Length: 150
Image 1 (tube, rainbow, N blue to C red):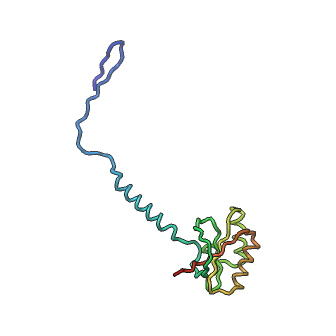
Image 2 (cartoon, rainbow, N blue to C red):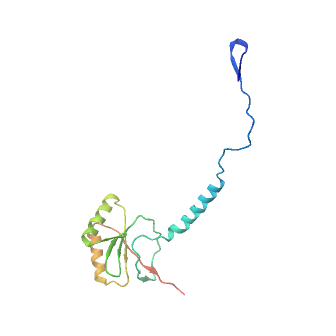
Image 3 (cartoon, rainbow, N blue to C red):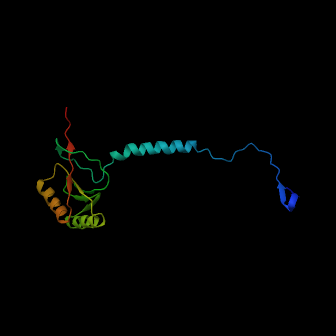
């Protein structure tokens, strides 16, 4: 590097270029972008198929309204054995009431999605629906399977 003084005493420096070694130090991100896009597509396809709560055999209905599960609902399920679940946690009726009240206190606009196995007795479903009602829930959606029309 050489320094020269030009007119008016300004200092000018000259830098010699280094010889190119031919090796690029840049990272090729194209394969990374391809992998990320494939993973994004997989998640977009699989996510709507996931259902929250415990897997139960829902009763069939011919006049049901299809709604997409957005994850905003409180899911309460009753299995074939009569066990009650808040999302995927097994609870008794007292704890169910407390959990729903707490969830509604944190998020007042939430609805309750009730999934009752089709093999349970009506009395079991009624008891749980009473607990849901007494906990302050204003809207309860009942989960059903659509009847396949041939």
